[in-house]
Image (cartoon, rainbow, N blue to C red; front, top):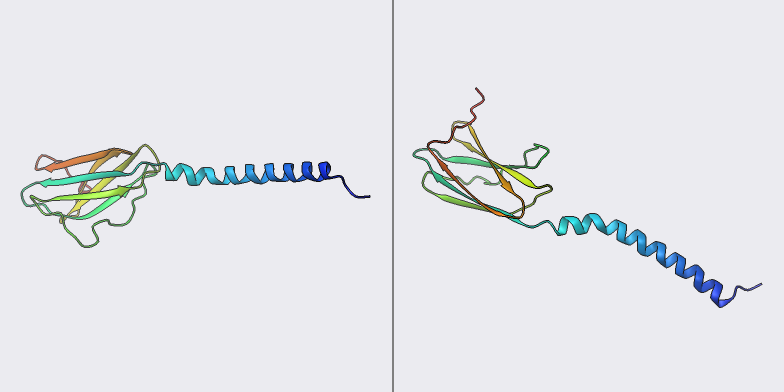
Length: 128
């Protein structure tokens, strides 16, 4: 016996609804990461004699990413801008390493542009 047109239409409507629902659920992670606002930070090195040879980024999980300077140096008296920082949380930690292997840290709020001026008064973490 053949199913009526209304029965087949109802079956396809239910199937379409579940496919649509599955598509929406699958798209939520993509949409949430796409809606993360871009963050940038301007780093000004106002020290006398320190140069920063590495720049790392860390999320809330404290896992440092790769060096962002790619062989460049932020020398004394210069400014460096890191654009389009991706944030998975509410903030991101910016870490610079000087020529002595010491680190300085600054936290930047996601979705906002930050400015970080490093002076001679900054207390570096040298692992002591």
